Image (cartoon, rainbow, N blue to C red; front, top):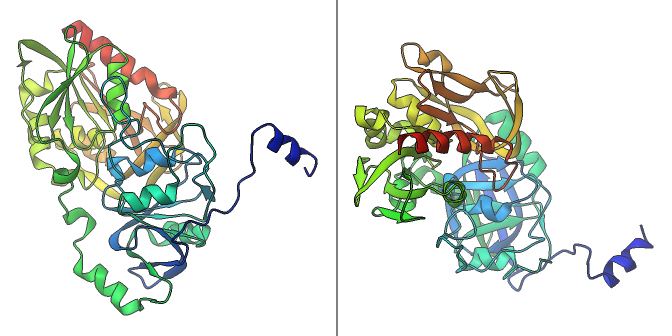
Length: 397
């Protein structure tokens, strides 16, 4: 190993080194509602935030995770020990469809928890993780035992917490951090749609060909790109918008309901729209939160998982016996016992805990997957779900 390092340096590579930003004198504290406390080095914004503390097991894709609207209202801990090695892309970059290169145009999490950070070393990096979070007004803590934190959350379940970053000379007491949690609304009590859903309808993609409506509850940009790459246009609608039969003279030939934050049972307007006969007649694809909302629209029920599924190596097994690895980010699940009397049937399950991972109907109009077939970050083995959906859309167009 000692002989290899000089060769790597001459080849243009460098080994990860601890990255000390200019604000390295900041102190960071995480306080959980059960009284557990973690202290470390603060970075990013020197602010205090309250949120639901969750963890992700993904080894790559931290910029995508941090900009995923599904993480709105949450403080995210990364189990992978080193973050920041390939930096972040320019914040104002856009793809050919005008979409941001990540999953949204801003950091969505309320706080970031990492074991350590490294100096960025990538040709496309515009800034470091630390600089990015400071610009986005998001606090972060490095140097805490994320392994211990993850084990604690797995044992106790998801907990609310306070993340506090400030000058090293000022150490907040447990009492004031606990009081911040008490004063803040609960995770399921907040209205995230006002923060992640679009203000009005927009159309993306080709001016001719099939048009797919997307009820946007905080959909990832990669889900929209998956549709656009299959040469269908996207009518992006606010989460509570009525799905029209036509838009600007074009027939709406399909419906996608994607991911988003919060308790799905709180989105009564979306559930009501998905239950309308004209909406139910469309070929429909539900992803993550959309999977849960489609079930709720058929009078099924959902429940909160103990600590959720968040990572890029989640196994699902389809009803035909195929097993795939998918990326997931959800804290709620559909109760399979509540499907009796609905027109939906289980399509896939999680072999680790038996939770429901997919739904479909006998007529072939509905496909729903709890995981993310688009990946980003993560595998794209389930991309065939988009192909099946688009094929049904083209038949209806």
